[in-house]
Image (cartoon, rainbow over all chains, first blue to last red; front, side):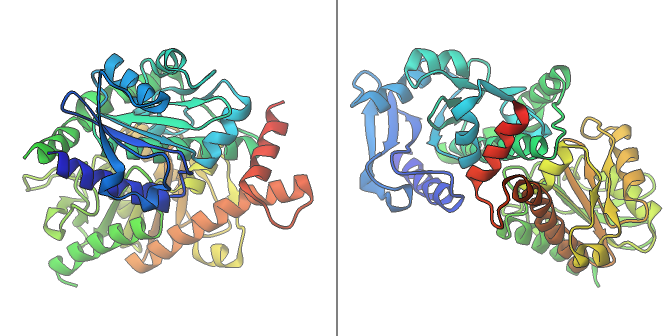
Length: 209
Length: 211
């Protein structure tokens, strides 16, 4: 399973770099055997190879960054994968806003009714901001996107950046329309319990096979 | 074209949407008319890479019935309604490309931005009323907004385009995404007096507007 996960991590590292969502220092991890597999922060994602993906025991974080990944896994049983990125429009919003609303259905479904900005990158702040959501931004920093699988964390990264572009773009056009909290919560419930459930279960089963 | 060729055409269009960055994160759906009574649509909840031509589903345009163990897209109602309303149309694509989705979130009518857009789509592109996915309200809004045009936005959701052929529908999708980006960038250019804009410029105008 570790080898399969490493291969999958390499694929998504490449995709994140091609999508232009990451900068040097960004990392990606997957929950695995009492700890996690995590990429090195010292190399651009496009250059990560198998040797740059390390296993970190949940009781022995190597540094502040791996401690943050482990804190998220420790607090959220529903999360099996984390991608930290610097998607440009999310970064722009995180500089001067406390949150931004879902102006698109897919953000409401996959992320939640809003994406909040954590006041700092410390674990307590991040966990509080991430509560009930799959992603959050960090003030003057980047994005933490999570998922049941790496595939979902990757989709979350794309959808959150698209949601940020929709909010920024519609504001520039003079009329950003937010999705109502009721509709957003309803769509998120249906997405989590019905629409994506089988797809995510299939993807998890493929990794275990 | 044979049924098999049409199924392949749907698969190829899906892969091309992905390659050209016209789907991002979530997938959208595609249909092609087989004859007066039937259409072929993409399956529900399956990405265009995993999807094989045989996973596409033949659906009755009038009754929405289908004879397949594979579930068709949940937006089959909109595809069928467009094909019923527009006999000259043979291909419909629904997607959520980044910049088109941003215009859809503003619920605006976008004027023709380029001559090519005017030729392909019409004078302007309207936004259909907001409705939750798969609802009658969403279907009605899309069909109304699409009248006399080959594209419409769906409020807070994405875009529908249609064409006489799949190639034409695809070209319209491509042009709409290009024009949607330009529509937003033109405002930024005007606000900042610049000829070219960067992400930072768009963010600067965003903060000006929310002050």
